Image 1 (spheres, helix red, strand yellow):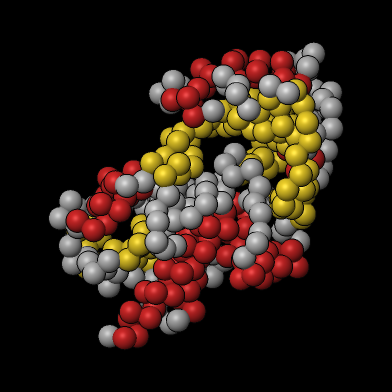
Image 2: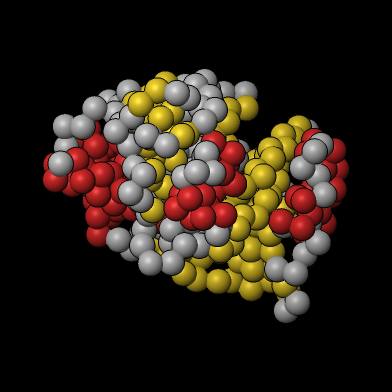
Length: 314
């Protein structure tokens, strides 16, 4: 069994397969585990570049979160953010948002601790059989955004090809901005509505719990679309937009801009939490539900169980 992609969906899928006694290989094209639950260290301190936080309302996922909490990996962050829009600044309450002091990537790494994950392993083709780069497999799971999966699939695999073609994804740029000091009002995180550049800004020092003067900004899909070829060139516009929004007098001392070509699904699949067809091709991720960390985990978990059941049935 081959799982391609070591984000939370792929890791959750592989975990179920291993639990059922199914031999599995996890192949990840990147240097680290985590996928869009991405964290990068700057001067030894992690900052979350992808998912900003996660929420919980599924009892099974809550059990996983409880294990993370017992291990000291997560903390309840806040149930109140602010929103900037035509009516100015207002507080918005909602579900508890959870954060990870060591970065959200640490959570996926914790789940994958006992899995056979190979990094820097680029898969080129998935063909009928199924076959991965010419090698036979009992089944293949593509745990990644649909447009990326489409690049691997032989068009002869019609069901999976149709499933990934139905997905639609939006882009974003995320910018980690380090400032000389904390000069912004208390806000934890802010949804930014009807803005030409920004969609979300998070106080990473508050989110991480260390009080560092670091903000992480996520741009709108429209702004990102114009800067995908040269994301670093967008830094001045993103930084200025953040400073204008929060009234910051000082420029950032450093900034890092990361491109997410496929940041979040905007058209999700209907009728199930995963795709599994007669060709032995499985698809998992947050495109099979609300675009949430929990949805990605559940998609991978459910697909792993379905594959294990199929193999037991013979």
